[in-house]
Amino acid sequence: MKILGIIPARYASTRFPGKPLIDLGGKYMIQRVWEQANKAYSFTKVVVATDHSGIYEAVQAFGGEVVMTEEHHSNGTERSFDAYQQLQEQYDYIVNIQGDEPFIDPKQIDTLGRALDGEVELATLVKKIEDQETLFNPNVMKVVFNKNKDALYFSRQCIPHIRGKDPDSWLIHHTYYKHIGIYAYRADILAEIVKIPLSLLEKAESLEQLRWLENGYRIKVAETDIETFGIDTPEDMDKAILHLSEPKH
Image (tube, rainbow, N blue to C red; front, side, top):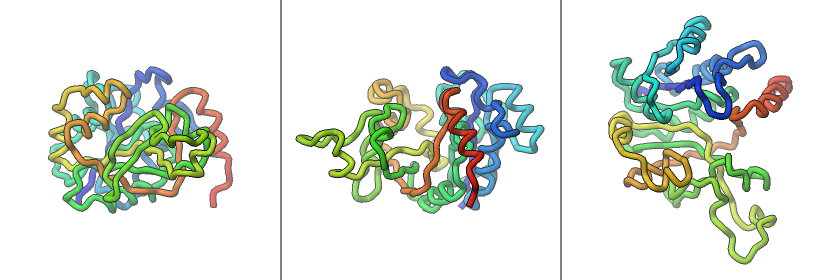
């Protein structure tokens, strides 16, 4: 199975402009993401897809492979497809690794990779939620799935709602899962989903994966027990620096 890893890296982030080029312990954040992705045995190749000359030059400087994409893309899926087309190489699957996940574990990527059997159309990762803060944080996407591990819905809200129980006790009564933002697309499916217009559910929650579900595509979920976190805002930097200083086992 040939799998291409793509790291979309956009400069003009609304909440944190220039995020890929922030200094994180002496390395650009995008470099840390690229290094972690390259440790995964699942990938045949890993490239960065960007729309910014500064990011392009930075990736070249640290020895990474990078593709310059169009500026107008509205999400990482479109940018990934642009990069894939430019490479003019055939792959069975393309995996989109978020450019703001500098601590993503290669084992997480390989967990997702093992779910890609040629039949799976789309896939992503989930992790059990362990605490109240995460459960009710609208910036953490929650997901519910069926017995076949196909996603039913993603939401910023806590789903499902436990009727008749105090929300403080919901973790006792149900196992909740958060979504970890890494996507795998079968190559032919990626070519299809980039042509689908914005859907009502996607517009409501601002979650692009809802567009795929609303149009009948299946998203397989693979479960990881490894914790990770992205850097969404400047305030997340303190957490990132603390993580870097923690002893590694």
